[in-house]
Image (cartoon, rainbow, N blue to C red; front, side, top):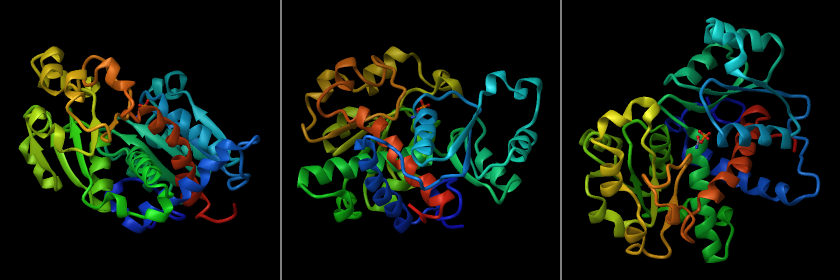
Length: 323
Ligand code: CP
């Protein structure tokens, strides 16, 4: 099923043309943020359900902001105080929300494959995956690619739309940390590979095992060896909620070998982009000063979550029609 008028479940099945469709549409929505009235009527009369079965700050707030900027009605389930706590299943919860009348579900869930399951339960409802277990976080991958293109295009004095995928060809992307448990890593790798970037992952053997090479990336276990190679450095936190803590001897040791310290930052080019999907564990995978350094685009990533998620909702729910 295509993205326009369909679902967004994983970036593994999205074409280059669809990725560029999202990035270009998001670029046009950035301007809405500058307006006095930050709204467009694209989803007037549509209902978007925001169902977060796992914790979130950035993704939830930016999806709900995005839906409201598109003039959709947003219903939001507070899972902690819902009947999920009484044992109601995902299927029955979705059926209940559907009975209220809805056009789209934005779903975060701890189980890999949950978004695909929901798309089968309610096939006529548009489903957008806001992170499922360690499987995929497609809108994070899209907003990361959007941010990279935006910054590189600005440096050239052109718009991202004018460059298409050109700026990604041969771009050297280094992903550092707990790749094994990271849905962000899977989505980032999918989007950057499709756009033509070269990708290396680096981390301890337990969290970046050599088996990851089957994803089409080069695997390394020595950050100092590959640090200066990168045009983009994407840092990942230790996913303690998925048991990653038991894969490293201690956070101090992880940080010593794989943390981006101010000393390491001094070795990279001032043009290298430092990225992190958040939440950051300052002092572990990223030093406090590095998070706020001029090369850091972390805040821009968060801000870009809104136009990118507006684009995804507009393309899936409205099929890209009627702005
Ligand atoms: N990047 C990300 O998914 O952050 P949240 O968990 O805060 O949504």
